[in-house]
Image 1 (cartoon, rainbow, N blue to C red):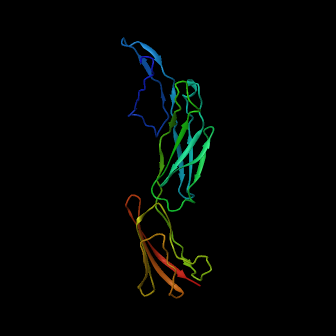
Image 2: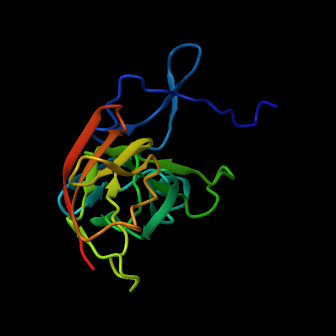
Length: 231
């Protein structure tokens, strides 16, 4: 029917959504190229931020969305999503603010840490639609991290009983840890980053370790050193 609204999709392939926010307005023309109407002005949400490699804290900032108000509605809120192996909602805000995300507690991070902001409309608008605006995708790349302790005490007290590197941002499918005694004899080996060396059957002393792994880009990372078995 002629009075039924029509839906049109427009894609701006030249936009640099990761750099700036954009304003859009669509005009409708008749067969004589005369303007017969304009849409509301929509202001996209731009997400930006910084990463702190040392503290593993990402700081996020974003602009406000404009466009729902001209259709009789407002913004329901700003939902921050994070993707780091799996996607989750971090927080929801009524207005754009600065959000800090501490990712240091996340176990075995792999690959980039990415964010986006979803801005849902506060109920159905005058066209019977409840829409959601999505910001640009912001990703932070972190170098592979391997913290290797220099001593452990396998005495059964439940504290530091196992020698095991603490890892983040590595490819877990390509990992190898080897332990050698003072004579150069291999005493332990694993390709599973969840398994450490408990020192069972070995004496107090100094041992050597060799650790090889790959980061998420396939680059080989090697680390070697000494560890002390104490009781």
